Amino acid sequence: MVYDYFQFKMPCNPSSLTRWRHRLGQEGLNKILSMTIDLALKKKY
Image (cartoon, rainbow, N blue to C red; front, side):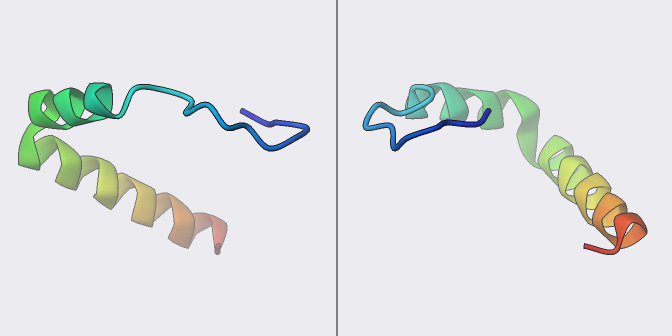
């Protein structure tokens, strides 16, 4: 998502992210982190 100017409104409700992280669990979060790191290394970011 790209904005042309500063937005004062949050893009989503912070409590939604909290509930999503709880549903995903620690194992799911670790998997996403691992995949993100692997992709960054492959793309050399």
